[in-house]
Image (cartoon, rainbow, N blue to C red):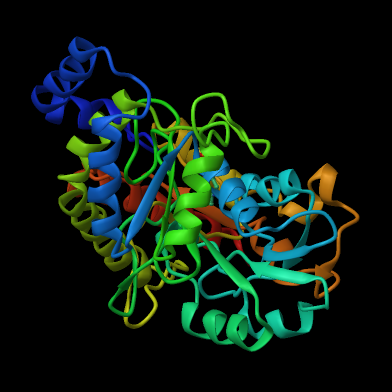
Length: 373
Ligand SMILES: Cc1ncc(COP(=O)(O)O)c(C=O)c1O
């Protein structure tokens, strides 16, 4: 049995009859940039996230950059973010001219360790980017409390967490702005790059709408330097179809995660734990294993494809070796990056596939234990 990490083709086959007419509609109208489909998607996605506004942009990276830029963050400012995230979270900060400051992560959920945030704040700190990593919400209650106390902006990186909830609140609409990626493999994925910002702040939505379209105030009038970063109409039309399926797909992911939990937990494997009161959307299902690299090799030989998210914490990426880190050596991020492994996870994953993957992991783990004298 071959089990891929992600399978985008099965999903396309299941919704082909809805997708093709949506594409045809855009093509036959010849309106590819901005326009009706984008406006409708923005309304629908804002509603889905419990936010008042949504602005579709070119990617999740652009969403983060434009949100920070619209909040006035730039050179001389510091922005706090977890060390264990995709590199784009830090790049977006760097694009503004501000300095990313890396904070260690919590061992239990891999998200920013909120007990370390206060010690990271200086008189230059302007914002925090909590990343809802793997689909598990960051500790937003405490983050919002600290942000209020120190007058910091909060830009949620929800690129892996469409539909996740912190308490009753969907992520993305809790801070000043929430940033989403529609990269094809995401829980809500386009057929190309795409992203969006969700916010309850009308002023911010307006600024971002302006910035994404060359900062054009009216035809040929550009009061500031703007960007070209718009979610195109074809992707918007595709995402409108897919958004209708997102809750079912999320429940399928959650069911697969529950099956993995049951199979692997009994065998003593370190499985992810859904935070109490939160809804984890399992963009990735990440376990820890001491023999991670060997496990991935053995599994691949048996047709099971795993991933690592991420093998190198950001403070060890070349451009960021010299930045400030809290604490100085980031022990949890440095340790877990050598043990984490992402198992196959996508909405169409079958119970038989989960059983197969789990059996192979348990078999591998037991074999290793038997060799320990
Ligand atoms: C946590 C996180 N932040 C930011 C991004 C950047 O999104 P994009 O690839 O759409 O630019 C991604 C995804 O790739 C991500 O997983």
